[in-house]
Length: 306
Image 1 (cartoon, rainbow, N blue to C red):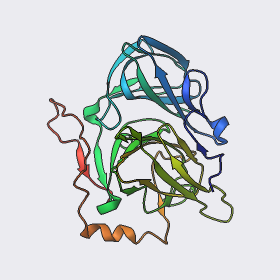
Image 2: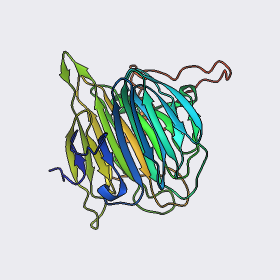
Image 3: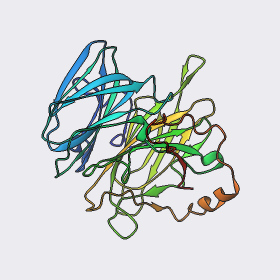
Image 4: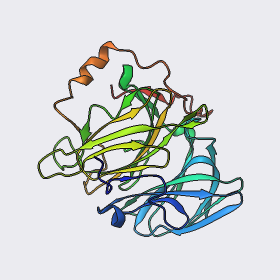
């Protein structure tokens, strides 16, 4: 059922030094990009940011990011299932060098933009960890690049962790029209699944048309390294099968004049939200919390969006 234009299994979107490479040209849209860079021990990579702004986010390992005469040391993490990561923002029209002494895997989330903002560091302690939903719809969101959390020109990026057996990105929602209460955003889902007993995990992603003029239709079995592109349409649920936790990185950008994540639920399933008030959040969540900032004294974990 899956349209191969929108589901790219691991390795099928590779280009050059990148194991995943999605840009506006290859996706057939105007703004959102994602690259996944894998570096061996002592590895180094240079890139020109061009007309896009980027966040360099460690998925596994640590690295140094050099841009505009500044060096940002990213402590990173062991894996996406082990902790919140720090990150670096690099602007458009810049030269960037990424190097890693021990090696690792690094996501570059990007968006075409007009304004050039300063390069800067994002500490892990500043990432709000949000719990959404309840019961089997419980999930964790690491809002490292969310609107209202970290300044960018157009880019919005967050991480979602769904415990084994849970359903996230639900109720199905969309953001493909510019109107009151909804913003127009292209979206990329990049997946990683936990392994158990030596077996790699698997999950599922659904996207379906939001109107007669829409054609995005996906029912994909997803594994680590897979990408699903969502130019439009209702998307959800994202399903983590029993025994395997699911991670996905969401990258969003679009033409809306306001940088905001404004969504519309599918009316057929919107009632599900009303059931959450009587259900507890899955006790397995959060899978982890942001590290404390000794100088702030303010908790970074919230329970919102229910």
